[in-house]
Each structure stands twice: as C-alpha cells, then as structure tokens.
Image 1: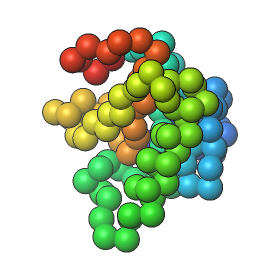
Image 2: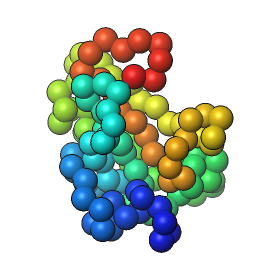
Image 3: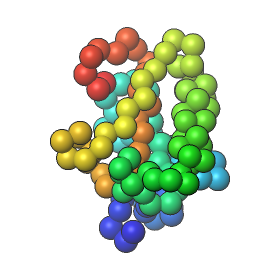
Image 4: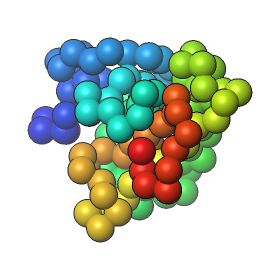
Length: 114
C-alpha cells in the first residue's frame, strides 16, 4: 500500500527503532508511547484490520503472538507482566489502517489502554 505508514516502515522507507524482526512480523517502538514499554507489532504484508484476518490466516496470527512473547522477553516485561491490545476500526480506536498489536508494559497498567 503506497500510503500506509506501517508498510513504509516495513519497507524501510520510514525509519523506526526496530525491536524484533521475523519472517512475517516486524516490531518497533511506538513514537508516542503510553507506557514505559510500548512496542507496535505489525504483519509485514498489508492486512487492513483484524476484520481482514480470514481463513488461512492462522499462521500469521500465531506469528504475531509468538513475536509478542519474544518482544516481551527482549524488553524485560515477560515476568512482571504486560498488555496486548489490538484496536479494530474507528470506534475501536484504530488510527492506522494496517493490523497492529500494541505491547504495553514497564509499570502497573490502569484500566485504560496505557
């Protein structure tokens, strides 16, 4: 997608502080963190939202979850705890039209997102 900011990050056209890179998933620091640890995990191929995850996407879903575990370990929140958030659509708070997961941690989290 030409205008997708996350696709541009995956392609290396926009710099990002990469935390983890796998075959199908890229994880990078959020530029507007809401917690001490705030990492964005995205599939490397464009998927618009969670609602675009259809049949045959189980492997990608598993890859994202496995990447989240690796990132939690890399960021040192695997034992203290963390939150995973996927926003879907405008009412769900999705600001970028590319499926992404927020990994938040580094402090006791409140009921809000961060």
